[in-house]
Amino acid sequence: MKYLFIFISFISYAQSQKFIPVDEETLEFIGEVKYTLHLNKKPIYTSLTSKDTLTTLPNNIVFDSISFKKFNYKEKGQKKEDLNEVVLLEKTIYELDEVVVVGSEQKEIIVGEKARFVKRSSRILMDSIDFGLIFRESELKNMSIKKLLFYVEKVKYKTTYKIKFYSVEEEGDPFKHQTLQLGKVLFESPILTLEEGTKNKVEFDLENYSLDFKDKNIFISIELLNYYDESNNIIEVESKNKTRLKFQISNRLNYYSKMVDFYTIVSTKELINMNLMINYDFANQFYKKPHKSNLIAPAILFKAVNKN
Image (cartoon, rainbow, N blue to C red):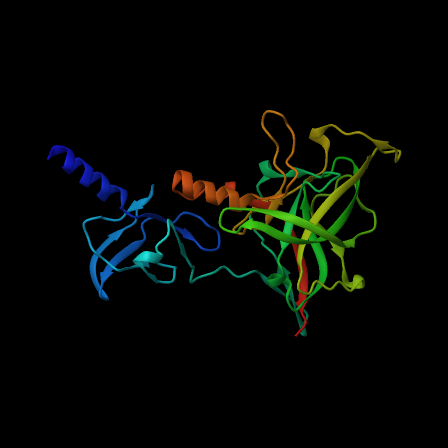
């Protein structure tokens, strides 16, 4: 009889359903979500999800559906058989991008994020496609692009570079791991220069290029050409003196970068969605949100006007 009891207990435990709630947009872990179990449309049990691990539903309660409720998120209900280990919840309150009025006829819109810079996370400009920012088709829809903005740490040596826009497709699981498939170069700037002493905002005028990004995801890469000394000779520069692009706090999943193996110092061939990876790992391994400073992105923006 003792062995039979142990076996039955093991079966009951194995059948317990477990899940974690995460933000549908950022995939960040959400703790202490109110959930209610229902049977025949009547609530029979209510509790809060765990704040630091998977939530295990009581296996001694018979139910046929479950609902979830948390402030700032849409209430969600689903059948028991549709309950997966990851429960996606949708925000009801969003932060809006800044809109700047210029003149009395048009509104010039900032497309992208404007947030606090994270100095320790600035990155050296590279002569290859090592990192960049994606602007998805939905962000650029009905927009006429006027300028590109980015931000740099104080430039120590004259630096030449190019701005390139690539058409791209995102591949992989949008809830776990995504990489970029680079397509055609849609735009390549002339050779541009950052003079010694340049710092903070840099603007590049795009009005004369008549860019059309309809139905395209755009990946922006700012790529190094050369450094120059005071006599205008091309030189090699120590890492500490190289030109660096500023990074900022980010709430989006649009920063892609190659990763470097800790032991071999070899970069991956693929560009990886960094903030998606961080959010997924924190939610599924540590059951918490990452610190804000862990989620960053290049400080790159568009200025645009609405075509309508």
